[in-house]
Amino acid sequence: REETLWYVKRIFADLLSTGYSVRLNMLDSRDFGLPQSRKRVIITATPKGSFLPDPPSKTVNEAISFKDLLAHVEDMALDGEIFPDHNAEGTRLGAEYDRLSQRPDGIVPTVRCGRGIKHYKFQRTLTQYELKLVQGFPSDYKFVGNNAAVRSQIGNAVPGNLVSLFYGRLKHSKYRDLN
Figure 1 (tube, helix red, strand yellow):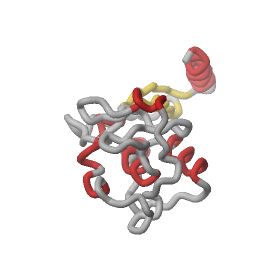
Figure 2: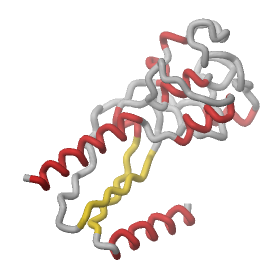
Figure 3: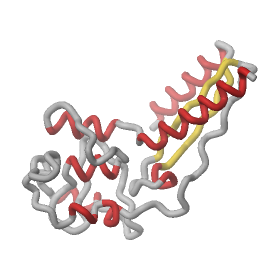
């Protein structure tokens, strides 16, 4: 974390020294409807004198629970027949996963590329299909690569709804500067 803080300070210093206005935003995915506690630092920078938009406001008071999000696949066989990425590949559950299941409020820990999350009902980790839903990807989103590559893509992604909200703010600020 100390190394991350160094990078953030460096980015801030570089942007400020080159004439940008800068804002640091800390957002949590669960405040935007996803069933995971995924805090992300978003740095917004605009040329000095340009409008610097506020971060998006919370879109929900209570995130959907992990169980509610996955209700439609709960009893589906892990054969990949209906959803190709809902299969048993990479779902082995070891003792190290006991601490990684969701909290009582139905929120799961941050989805990361190098570790699984224990399913709330079954003795396995989440499938790729379940992980992508928790991360906010549409159910029909297609990834490219082997199991490890896909899990890495899901774990490294910034949830799309956060990106969309920020883009909307930035787009609005651009038009505001033109008027």
